[in-house]
Image (cartoon, rainbow, N blue to C red; front, side):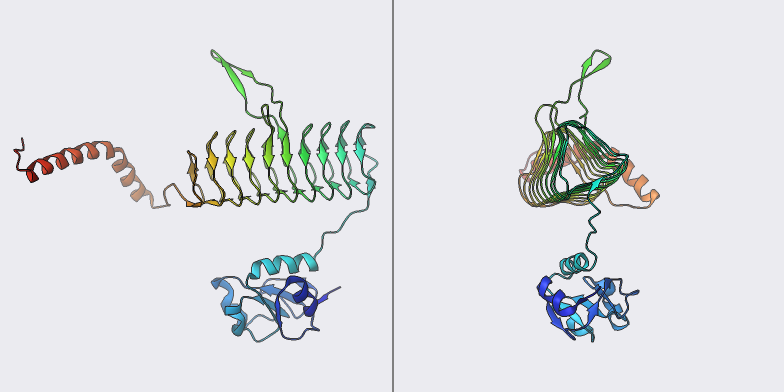
Amino acid sequence: MGISLAELARQCQAELRGDPRHIVERVATLEDAGPADITFVADDRHRAQLTTTPAGAVILSLRDADRFAGNMLVTRNPRLCYARVAALLHPRVQPAAGVHVTAVVDSAAVVDPSATIGAHVVIEAGARVGAQAVIGAGAYVGSEAVIGAGTQLHPHVHVGARCELGASCIVHAGAVIGSDGFGFAQDEARWEKIPQLGRVLVGDDVEIGANTTIDRGAIGDTCIGRGVKLDNLIHIAHNVQIGEDTAIAACVGIAGSTRIGKRCTIAGQVGINGHIEIADDVHFTGAAVVTHTIREPGIYSSGSPLETYQSWLKNAVRMRQLDDMARRLKKLEQKLMMLSEGGKVE
């Protein structure tokens, strides 16, 4: 069942231009949208399609409003408005409450009657599962772990013993929360394991991507703040602290005991060293290597852009010559200084 544009505009706090009674049923791309669909434009790449799209309505910014002749929702942030419209038109379906016959739930676990426990789930003693939580097929909830109200674990998620997830979280398939941190002491040529005794504490409204791993603390806890968004295939080592509303893209690795501030964004394949601090509102571009503490907000980058092999080879050779070139340059500067002072150059 669809929703009128008037209702969408009201709930998304957008300006409606067009027919308030027009009903839209789903979101779609500009190319695929039909009369019962709504789409959006938020960048230069898609503006040209506004003259040809058959969409029943388009979400636009004020500067693009006169490029489209049909129904539109005008807003300062088209992408945010689209997210809200999509959530209204395609709400999450809450599965029926209850425990699947194949699930194994310890008698000492506490599962709210409104929760959904899927096939082959294992919930250990002392674990607590909150109201309307959904535990997907094959997931594991360790002893004394806590799954908050409305939190959804997709199939095959692992939540280790004593780890806690807040309310309204989403954890995608294959994620591991509470694996042992990489802690070993060296005994001459051999390594001896250090027991990992801490927990992972995840705040409310956190999303964790597929196959992401978050290690438990060595002694204290690994903490993921409220509203943090983690993409797929991220590794977060023991005792890391991540501040509220930080977003981290795929294939990022964060070494142990690093503290990351609030509202940071970390692009794909960034590597972050251990035992450093990153201030609030810091933004790293893709493939940056972060080796030291960052105390000031801003945008930071590192690494070399892609180039042809021949160009890279020449630059690699020159890079190896930099130390010798620096010494020669220093000598030349010293000679020039002596000449400017009227001295004799040997």
